[in-house]
Image (cartoon, rainbow, N blue to C red; front, side):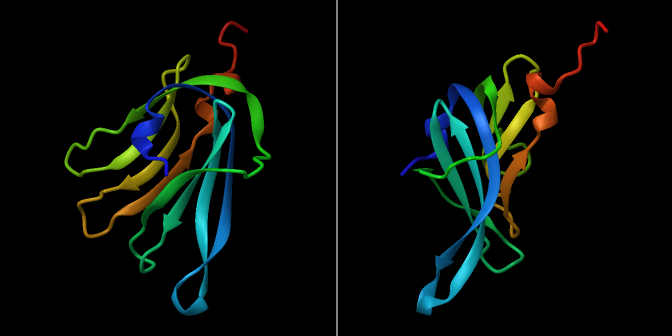
Length: 137
């Protein structure tokens, strides 16, 4: 199984998609789960939400998958860094565009030590260098 720390470092990001998957829970009770799929260095990673009780959520797991991402784009060099905690603890990896210096993708669990942790699957395509307007025109 993949851990968020395994993704720290330089990568090429080439796709991101949101989706959901139906997983069988206890007693054959199917449950929809939010997922985010993203492609780093040619591998697709799927982060799956555990929605717990509807108020609290967390990242259940992240794994390499065979999901076919439809939102593909030219390779962007990104740096994966684990988010620093501050007041609350987080288990989140932020992918920062190496040209713009802005966060483009965040995945994990926010506020892991709080009563209400939250699954984090934030995609900010406006921060990609590919989407920056030429300031010289």
